[in-house]
Image 1 (tube, rainbow, N blue to C red):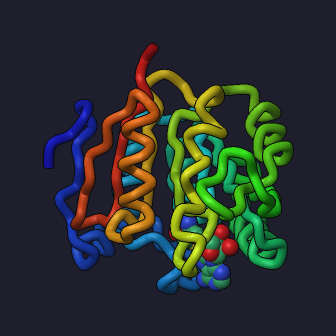
Image 2: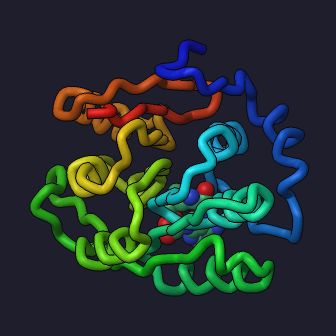
Image 3: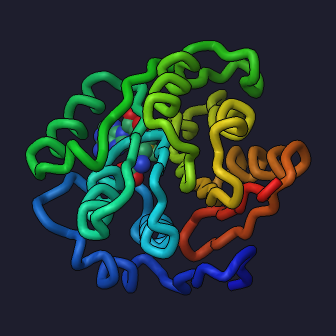
Length: 219
Ligand SMILES: C[S@@+](CC[C@H](N)C(=O)[O-])C[C@H]1O[C@@H](n2cnc3c(N)ncnc32)[C@H](O)[C@@H]1O
């Protein structure tokens, strides 16, 4: 798999990825089809391990949030903010972080979905004030951005993740890694094509992992 930089890519399918994840599979987590596939999550974890980022921003929280937080704890550096629109899901994910003593490395940012001027069609995006305030309070640029929200599987919401780059461009570090999940879906393929037309970033699509990975330009 070609890589836009020198970070090794895991040529893993999901079955192999479960073995790689084993050291981070601590207390029970409710894995479901809503979660990133194991091979996609390993891609994110490898980026975190190689870059030791000071700030990871994840759009769409879940079991991935807890697993990435476990790795940050193990590495002893870096912070994860996971943006979540659903209050009850945000509460559950934050409660699991608290249970595992991970609240100092990761936190859930509540950001309801709203109409947005940068949206594609009638889709909704995270509340801009909640999003930008959380990142600004972190006091550092985003070095790894994981785009796994808002939900985009419902008819009419297929392009809901499009505003991510426009909204966060000014808060991305030079060389930041951007991971878009669910790239096998037509909506995410459209979003990726439009991002590549509108921003100076080229993505590699890893079909085995179901993600596309890009690097934000240095200048
Ligand atoms: C694609 S999911 C995000 C999944 C997350 N990044 C992960 O890998 O676990 C997008 C949204 O679905 C919802 N969600 C995720 N997992 C869920 C679950 N197991 N049950 C209910 N809602 C879930 C949350 O609102 C989340 O923001």
